Structure formats: C-alpha cells, structure tokens
Length: 179
Ligand code: HEM
Ligand code: HEM
Image (cartoon, rainbow, N blue to C red; front, side):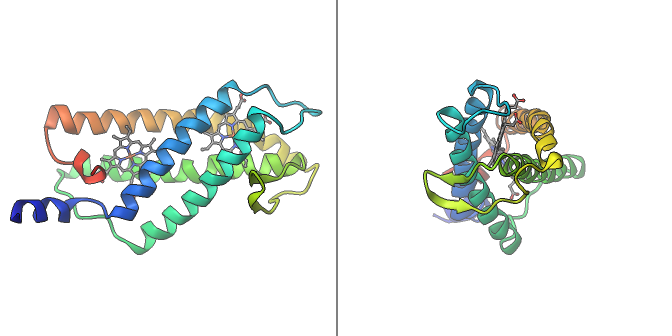
C-alpha cells in the first residue's frame, strides 16, 4: 500500500495526464488529416478533410489553452534525473509547448485570412485572429506547414526519450504519464 502511494505521488495529476493523452490523440489525427487533405488554393472551399482539419484544430486550440492554464497552476511532480537529462527533458518539453502553441496559431491566422471559420462543427466558434485577405496571415500558411515538421521532429525525440527511459534506463519516467 505504501509503495502504491509513493508511486502515485510521483505521477503527474489525473487532469494533466488526461490532457496530455487527449492532445496526443488530437495531434495524431491532425497530422494525418493535414498531410492527406487536398492542397489549399485561392478558391478552395473548407469542406471534407479541410473542414476536419479546422474542427480538430479548434479542439486542439481549446485543449492546449486548458492545458497551459492547468500547467501554470499545477507544478509537475519532482523528478530524480541527473542534471544533463533533467535539462534535456525540460528543454524538449518547453519546445514542445512552444510548437504546440505556434503551429495552431499560424493555422488559425491562415484560416482567418481566408475568411474560414474555425469551429468544431458549429460548436466552439473561435473568432478570426487576422483580417480576411491579410497577406501576412496568408503567408503564415507556409510557415505553419514547415513548423508542423519541426513539431513532428520534437515528438519523435520525445517518444524516443520515453522509450529510452522505459527500456534502457529502466526507470519510472514513463509511468509518470500513464495509469
Ligand atoms: C498542431 C496542430 C496542427 C498541425 C500538426 C497541422 C498540420 C498541418 C499540415 C501538415 C498542413 C499541410 C501543410 C502543407 O502541406 O504545406 C496544414 C495546413 C493547414 N492548416 Fe494545419 N495543422 C495544425 C493546426 C491547425 C489549426 C488549429 C488550424 C486552424 C484553425 C489549421 C489550419 C490549416 C490551414 C488553413 C492549412 C492550409 C494552409 C495553406 O496551405 O496555406 N491547422 N496543417
Ligand atoms: C507514445 C507517445 C508519448 C509518450 C509515451 C509520452 C510520454 C510522456 C511522459 C512519460 C511525460 C512525462 C515526462 C516527465 O517525467 O516529466 C511526458 C510529458 C510531456 N509530453 Fe508526452 N508522450 C507521448 C507523446 C506526446 C506527444 C505526441 C506530445 C505532443 C503533442 C507530447 C507532449 C508532452 C509534453 C509537452 C510534456 C511535458 C508535460 C509537462 O511537464 O507539463 N507527448 N510525455
């Protein structure tokens, strides 16, 4: 019993774990849709897979906003990593958060410049964050696509690190984020 309590006290809280895995599912779907949807041109309509990209994107923006508020008000449990690994993990997590904010924001700006509503099938309608026709926000569409690759690389590193902890170091880091 004492061992279970000690293990639980090292894990992230229930809400932090729930939000982590919710964002993982949404991001996985968003990459699949982003890379399979038709190319977006001037006359493209936001239907089909593109409508899905906007809907999942809207859910992601809301989930990330909640997650950041939660993170800022709830400190993660202290870890026991050597200084170099501790630094690498903090730096990667910070960059993950930065990319998880920048990529959706740039997509949202691009959608706004096209006059497209970002909404979850009519629910959670987000306001436009750029004027329709804005050339800067329009150009952000390309940056969005490039930064999505940066986010992908960070996620690959992050999953590699989780596997390294589980199978090479054989420590309890992975269990901090699981049930
Ligand atoms: C982390 C979340 C997101 C990922 C990983 C992602 C990924 C992608 C990818 C891979 C593309 C195709 C880029 C290309 O082929 O050049 C794309 C395009 C696009 N995404 Fe996202 N996206 C995300 C969030 C969003 C959000 C939140 C919105 C809007 C609410 C959005 C709106 C768009 C639009 C409008 C395009 C077309 C851009 C253009 O071609 O000018 N995305 N996204
Ligand atoms: C199979 C996939 C994944 C596994 C096994 C996993 C595992 C973990 C673990 C164990 C932690 C806690 C590390 C610690 O002890 O501090 C963590 C944190 C984190 N993960 Fe993941 N993760 C996965 C996918 C992802 C994805 C796809 C993203 C990005 C969308 C992501 C973003 C984050 C972030 C930002 C943190 C830092 C949390 C915080 O300190 O607030 N993870 N992950």
